[in-house]
Image (cartoon, rainbow, N blue to C red; front, side, top):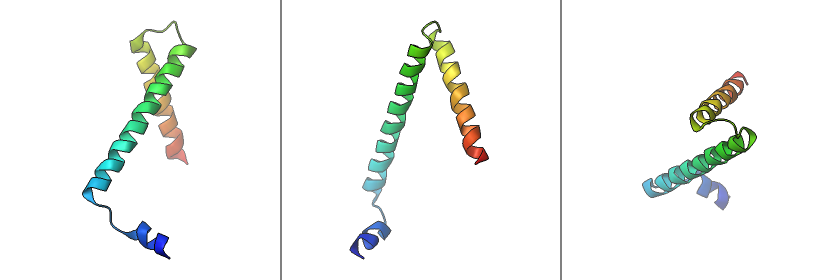
Amino acid sequence: MAKQKDFMRPLSDAEIEKRIKAWADVTMLSLELKHAAMRKRHPELEEDELRELMRKELSMLKIKQDER
């Protein structure tokens, strides 16, 4: 029962800020990893082309998620 009460308690502004920053860090690392994988998969592409390809792939993923 104590765990449930902890789960239900409101978050402080500092805790919210901490979680947002952690989420942003994870998101940025994920994008950097994706970019590195794309660079390895398509070494012939320029940076602009890699970014465009990433945008297209991420857009397609978003569309697939929205369909669910």
